[in-house]
Length: 172
Length: 186
Image (cartoon, rainbow over all chains, first blue to last red; front, side, top):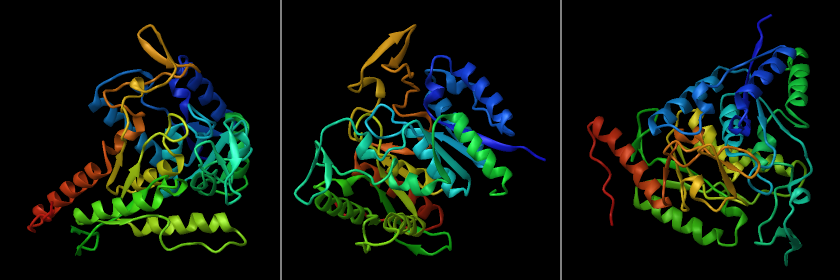
């Protein structure tokens, strides 16, 4: 049987040991019967020209088009209750392309519960943050929550496991 | 005006992907955005239009469906990419923007702050010439200021500039097809 192709989305490409990590992720994909679609190697570099940047982004979009499943790390990133920009964008792209999409995060409590800043009820009885801004109802923004196949509590391996069960169960 | 996929000449409809609905300033901002769109011959569509959605069973799913229906209806996207609760954009806005990009539809963003992440108010440290945030994630710098994948989007400094760019691109298409460009009234 042809292996399903997986596209990984998330901030781990920004880690110092990203190349090694993605080798491990490729092996993990293999373990669950998937083939990891590899980023262009230049993506692991810190800098480059604007032209190269655009070319790499176009190559990634093509990878996304070629994949069967996207698995996205949507843990809070550089903010209180928002994931890294790229998985949010790529999950939207995957939704448009009709791909199976899994978001994973270590803590799937709803945004208001995860929010570590100050919260209070406003004059309409709605829970808001210190700037008067209300919270999304679920663990992620509504568009992500309803635009993915599943949100998995845990890590990449947990998400791969769930995707593999679904894939083998014929949900593809 | 622009030429749609059926070859018809009409005003393009922009999906205004944004986080304004969470803010008290929403009505004034949306009114302003719509007036700017109008100036450039664009119909600006705020996702909240056509509401409110009746409370009840599957409310949030119906809210999602409502926005998705508008996304399918629109010809292109203009997205508000300012920081949201930290140093990332609003994830719902990005999801919608990614949708338009994947379908090959024109996509613009606007960011009114300091563009390069490296220049923003973020705790960072330098290690062998590379900047990392406090959690050890590299702050990439490819002469662009945003994460790599956002290179697929044209990001302006203001909402009006994004409309201007969209108008310029639509005008190019019009002229190529032998039509007059749209006359923007200052």
